[in-house]
Image 1 (tube, rainbow, N blue to C red):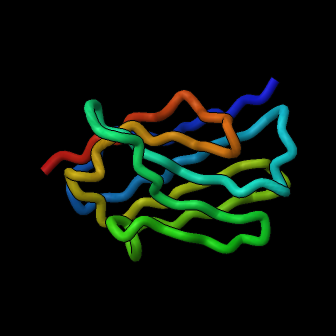
Image 2: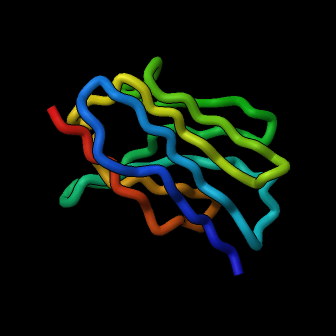
Amino acid sequence: QVQLKESGGGLVQSGGSLRLSCTASGISFNDKTMCWYRQVPGDERERVACITPDSRTVYAETVEGRFTISREYAKKSLDLQMNNLRPDDTAVYYCQTQWFWGQGTQVTVSS
């Protein structure tokens, strides 16, 4: 059974930082492109950042320069370091690979 489990969300003030983590089980992690998405109620899910098996990265324009995606192969974990957070970063953040999704973790940024 494939499981993706996110952690690290919470409430932070504007300008602050949070680090999200996602651990994968039941799946071959090292050969998959992994992504972070986010969603605000009523809006479409937005791709935030992705990292390939050889650690190439791509970011949404809205987070470029503020967020950093990384992966740790031995731990089968995917991280998202979020700096200089803004209120419009408030969303539920999801870990994703192929057709598998985590349950999401809430990030709330207060102004």
